[in-house]
Image (cartoon, rainbow, N blue to C red; front, side):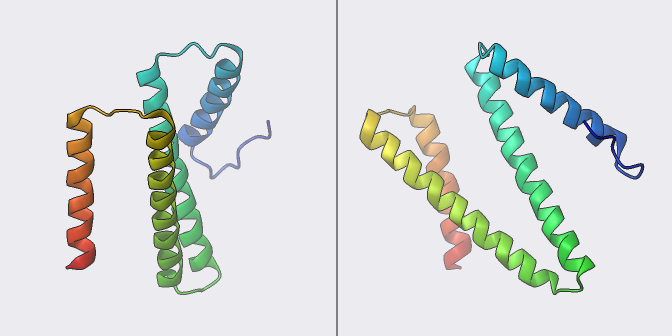
Length: 121
């Protein structure tokens, strides 16, 4: 593993090492509690999206591009991801007949309604 640049925060470098160790550990011993694994996946997805957003904004700033264009691109990517997740979820329901607890459906419905209000004014 190459050494981190001097300006790279030590805490992020330690996190990278821990993630690499976790990767190897999951590959050799995948017996992890489902709840923990789901929390890990969500945290990693959020971190990846945040790192990508920061990278795109830095790139726009460094190349003297309008950061609004980068934000617009990132918004489009988020919409694409949401659509894909909805399509995947729908396919799972069709394929497996998976039933979700009522509380989960209610939370999802509340989130969708809040988004709809924001989109439709």
